Length: 101
Figure 1 (cartoon, helix red, strand yellow):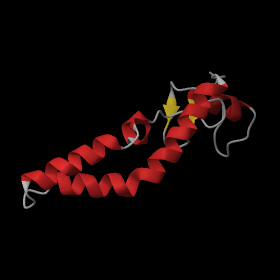
Figure 2 (cartoon, rainbow, N blue to C red):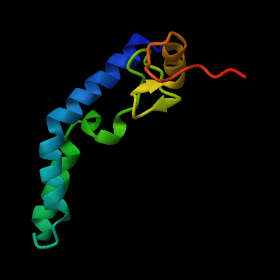
Figure 3 (cartoon, rainbow, N blue to C red):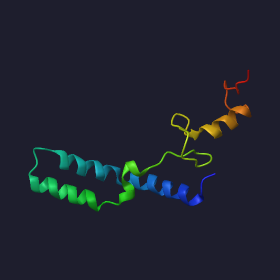
Figure 4 (cartoon, rainbow, N blue to C red):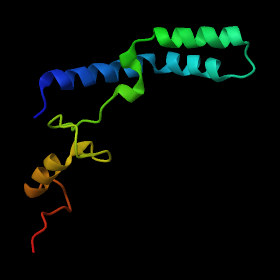
């Protein structure tokens, strides 16, 4: 189980990313628009730099929804391989059984 603080930090980052997504997208569009003047584009870059760092999407870490484990993460299921195996062993996932030979 991951530390509660790291899980909470990641949740806070998710909230910030959601909150500033529209503003960040608008500023990026202005900054990358070649038709705008260099001053406008530079101002957009400065405003983009003023946003909180934790509001950047690349700061998010994929974590297991059950345990908070950051490694061995399945995106489709939003859980780690260990949690998935545990649920499969208990028969909680339909159609999935633990392999044995």
